[in-house]
Amino acid sequence: KAGVTQTPRYLIKTRGQQVTLSCSPISGHRSVSWYQQTPGQGLQFLFEYFSETQRNKGNFPGRFSGRQFSNSRSEMNVSTLELGDSALYLCASSKGLAGGDEQYFGPGTRLTVT
Amino acid sequence: GQNIDQPTEMTATEGAIVQINCTYQTSGFNGLFWYQQHAGEAPTFLSYNVLDGLEEKGRFSSFLSRSKGYSYLLLKELQMKDSASYLCAPIKPVNAGNMLTFGGGTRLMVKP
Image (cartoon, rainbow over all chains, first blue to last red):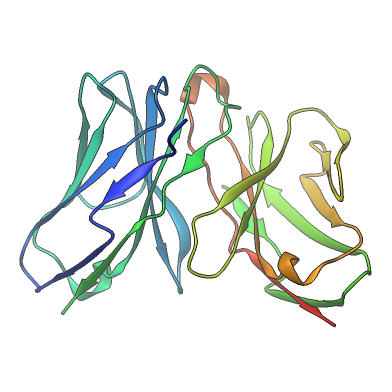
């Protein structure tokens, strides 16, 4: 079956702009988590959505938001972009039934803020 | 808190065995994941330990001691393709969903 897909794969934005990233989970998976990966901070949890509800949230400012649709696809939005938001944004899907579910990562969206 | 410590880098020789340690301070977790990430690629699942002890899966094994906040990943018969970053991630309790907190990762370089 198809893996996790993310669009776009690459994105260049200017400071102050906003951006929306999309993630389509594996068919049948109801949980989608978002992570930010930077060389300095590593892989950090942003938020998790399950059945259209945000179930967990990491320690990121309110400029970072997300949502999940009824078909489990998810989007994350970053408003008022800052240079420090340049990163690889990964989404991961899982069945979401228990905390020990294996998470499958998508290829990521590399965001560059200039 | 969830201080997760892993060595930053390790080097090993092809065919050898390497052990990557991970220590953490966390309360109420229900398991620990290991992921492999090649440069420029997404992390891929290696193992999940929910009970104390050793889980073996081919050339890779993972050990967990919950009371000590300690885990290790053991890679046997190293191959060049094993050069990658290895990330450990304790997970919060089942009612908290799928929130992984990753360590900084250990970059393993396998030399001929």
